[in-house]
Image (cartoon, rainbow, N blue to C red; front, side, top):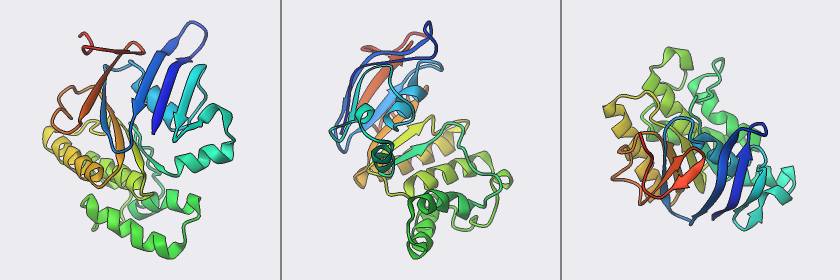
Length: 222
């Protein structure tokens, strides 16, 4: 499903963020991407999400080299992906319902389908009674669940999550992991980036360690 060959990404000539990344993710896998802050986890996920070009190397998604396709084709690929952003990116002037519906509206999904799909994911994340509230009136955990619901409402074949537990406490983190596990069990390929080594230890089947922009074999040093 995802293939990365000798991928490099730089922010300025002297600031390598990712160096010589080689990665294959098969359809249906649940991959944990573990690494400290600044290791390059967010950048790696954004490249897979077709958000910005690579500086060297190739990324293939479903056999398509994303550097050699049109923006229209990249947009089509993104429509099959869900992304849980580290900073959530909720729209404060929109209600919970409107935030979750927003990506469907951009995709041109018929309004009748939107009215069916949004309540489905609200129920899935336990927020069916909060649909009319605004993000700033919610707790941190509730905002996190809105972000998860927004990523799930597009029914992605690939879900990318960047520090999805964020600032959640242990109980809420555990609830979130249980939710992600159920989504994966339903058939969604998943890559979850976190700096918490043990958050996904019992959930994902494969763990990769990223340190200073490189995948390392035995985990990262403190």
